[in-house]
Image (cartoon, rainbow, N blue to C red; front, side):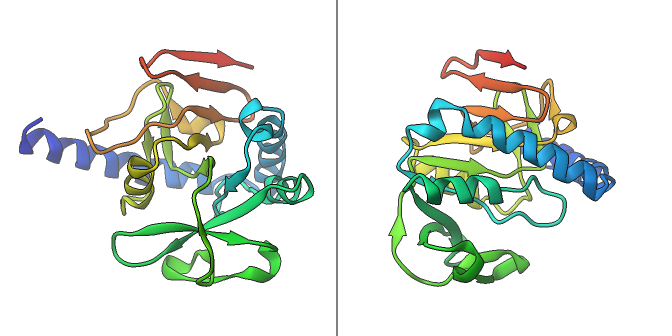
Length: 202
């Protein structure tokens, strides 16, 4: 892929970010709560969640899909819970958290994150995003933290959470982008294998 193609992809991604952010922010609080509840209940029923030992969650900002139910169940099931912490301009790590209500504080970009503590490697990472496609590709906020982290921790199972309108048939992607193994929305669950085949379930 040459530089001109990379520039075209970057521009298209930025257009999709603006469009999807506007669409997502138009949801009412009731719509967000209802959809987030359905999405989390579906994740809780997956083999991926139930077989995990260390669950990496994100702290939702704005209109992102909530993760508080997943956190509560992970703690109740005796799993290790971890949240991302931005270490520097390029590095993100997951830090063990005992109680999200106490152990998280406002960090870089205004996102709740843990204070420096024990760094762990989740075997399941719940991934946020703005735009997704049915092949597991993701467009985030453009900083690249998740792509860099996941590229170095490919053994972790990756599940993306999204409102159904955030999932398109295809989106522009580059060689640096890391796909998720599964996308869960309020209407469907999409599993993606290593050969880029997808299996859609209700």
